[in-house]
Length: 194
Image (tube, rainbow, N blue to C red):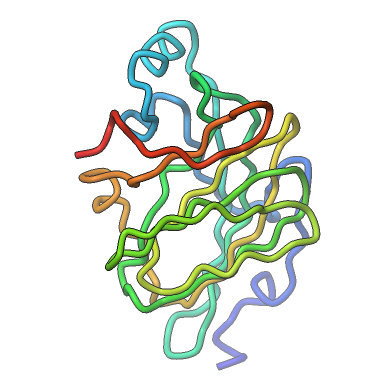
């Protein structure tokens, strides 16, 4: 197995300021790519009419597939808000629902929104530098930047996990995270839930 993995996948350097892993391609998501993710659709439309900023970027490393193998991604989520809702990622389930994931906070202040697929129980878990968030299987997860500097994090997941963005696009999360009295708070979503 070791011979089948390129040396570039065995050791990689990354940048905290750019969230880039070597020369690997990255995915960039703009505000226009997140239509339907924010609860306040009027605030979203007004913000998008003014500009279409980059909200986040992710670089993935997928060295090997197969039983017991891992993939990982380095993400950077920029600060900002739409209405009182923090900038966020699309969020997803894993295609292989039992797959768990670990997020390691490297820089900045943020939160993870976790929602159990079966009970719809939602939790807000802090994600900041020098912290780890465990995302159990069968759990939708979304990252939010609750600070005023970029949030940089590493996600580590089984190679067979896959990403199911469609389930979230269809029904969205039951809750959202908003700024309330200067602090992040969970609030039930009243708009933008199918």
